[in-house]
Length: 386
Length: 207
Image 1 (cartoon, rainbow over the protein chains, first blue to last red):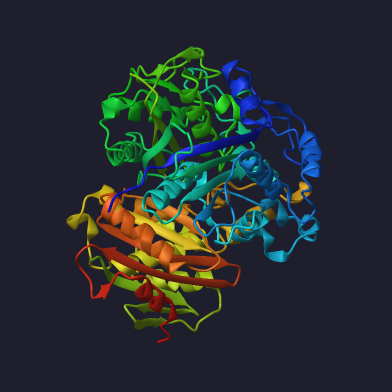
Image 2 (spheres, rainbow over the protein chains, first blue to last red):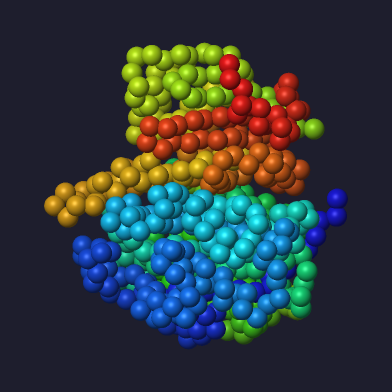
């Protein structure tokens, strides 16, 4: 069976860095963080460095878009981000060959609060009900697919959508990922003692943990190029079989996920020219990724982590970081790692410190997460040159 | 043509293996005591089991029942053995338990041991760690099992992603309601053809 090509047609991001792809890219290119010290008892008992969305600005935009009180904050963010993505496109979202793939870890978890839950149908705490509310808003006739695979969810969602389009089952797929900050998630990471005391510092010698954030990202994939020069080639997800809350010291799952993704893309490892790491800035994660990049023999290939801009946005992370990588390939630049000053991992990997010009054809996106799971996906810019 | 080489069902305080009732538990109506009884029946010695939430316990026991004497690791490479599961309620059962440790300011004791289970895909990791499987992993949330979708997804893993065996199925826990229907797919071995209708019938069988 002839596999179809999968093109990236349109992308959008809503985050602490801004309410459009342009705002987000501009802030990253000029190395401006969205993380700041927040004092909000609804989120954390103690002051906390994190990257919250400007909800005052969002509420005004929700009103402008007529997003009613029938939707939760999470759903409104997801719907708004998707609407932004489709704004200038001629796409029939109500077609049978169009599908929504939703990536989230905690969705409407805030509805565990009885006072808040009282305003919504009782099933709305379920991820499938939140996803249905979102896809129904756009009049899509298919039950949405929901991926909930911890921190790798976004990359798994892109890979799932890619295989559903390449096999010919769907023509257009909306990959929509998001998570919002909650006391639930923040208290959990605090109890794990995995949060940084400041803005996180990926791959740096003084890194001391991750920063949390919130965001939504939307990527429209299609079997029709519609002028796009960016393709998703292939991806994979493998388990370390080592520990549910810490990575393998030998980057087992990482290595299998990366090599399988490259193989599925019909490429050689040496074809990879640009890497977007998971780079949470926890001591173990970044060291594991450096070891994994070493095992691949890609120490010289430029690599970045974008966690010091957005924080770790869980179900959104894999999607917004892929979007930023793709957009930078389109603009023929490499995005810098904020917070990286002194090399702090055992392998001499080539961490990008400042925005630089480069034309790249093949790029690898990586993600790792709780459960010992690792995901990767390969993107191609058909206009990129070695 | 890929095949289903074994299947199990855990429901109503009963356990079936390949269609045969192997445990009818009457002692209590508590899920965790029932799961512990299955653990004992299987002769398992795995202390980590007692730290797990109910979803992971049920998935782990389901995998143990499926594998039994079938040593996949002798037949296939670790990275060729996948785990693909789905359910309706994600990790909501343990989410509620964790939330109870943080909702009152006077009684605020967030537990990392509970928090780590507040992701539905942790059960995949628990199964992989127990057996050493390093293959493909995915956890999907669906209102009810979409057997056509899960069939297509798993066939793609076998045909396009170099996977040789897949532990798949449904593992759901939400307060007092629970159900596991799991099956092992292998490329060559097994009596049942791996087809969407045959997956559906594993859910419907009342024996």
